[in-house]
Length: 455
Image (cartoon, rainbow, N blue to C red; front, side, top):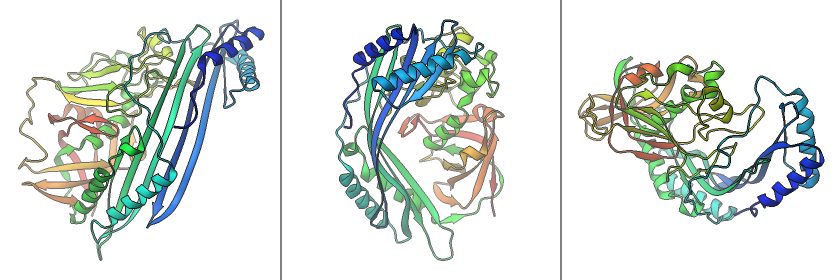
């Protein structure tokens, strides 16, 4: 699919020649290229057809004083590379002496093999035909479903490269496809209700279209019979997607860059502290077999690996780039981007319970429990309602009040709390891990969460 892979050996040789001609002895280059085709539809008509190609190249040069300059380009011709090297070299005179990145010590370490066969593209006409059929099928599921206002079908390929003057040479390719369907239902005299679903795959032919339609229809229809909820404290069960969204919003807790910048709940000495209930485990596993977007190395060339962030409730690790790892005296973890200030971010979360642990809410199961509880399906307004550096959240949600197995959709309500209290108030992590489009997680139960009903 898309363009032929770059010849990285030839690219490295050209850079070596250009650099030595300019008297540059230390440099590196990170590049990512992608192309994608996407379609959106509206009531049986094509709404948007889009094909795009992107490439971004970052070149860093260290000068004789050890200061680094950085430049970005999208031009891989000899003239473009020479211009980028020269620009970075000139910029290095103004480099920040207090924050000098180095090469990752693991940039030449072996990477784990990734079993991600590249898939052929189906083409934009095939995408359009499939999405029109999916929209038509979803609209037919219930008379109240009038529109599918948010929808999209996308396929594409991408390539990542890292090389440096020390001999590091990394290259990886992947293909990926995604589908999302978000339906809106309206009944006379009632508020509009909505629900949606997402599917990812290595190629668009492998996407589970029917599963996506079924889930979007089921979620939308289940919210039609809604009622207000009383304000109070509730036993709450989070769906895997909702819990992963919440944890992801507070990922600065595990981010060494955020710790060093003073914008994280964690401090350097938080490692080893009890952060959650003793049966809670969180792993960042960018190599998980279900992670469609996996890459074998990060922006600095460090191999991707599974990293235990929380083990038996204790904070065990931070996510590191080369620079943060050096500051903490540890190895980089494979979570870095490459830029003027190297960013750090998570890949793919896995949540699971400790083996053999006795949980206070072991009898709780979202399918069979007779207890009264609130099932939170999805959290909204995460960017506005989360104060990550303070730990607090106040978020509108979609979900149901479940009583004796009967589900009644919650009309409008907000769940609020503190992430540290929430992690210490978990009473049950169900045994079945569920693969979602953003990680692996079972249903997670938390007791005593504050819910405000909106009349």
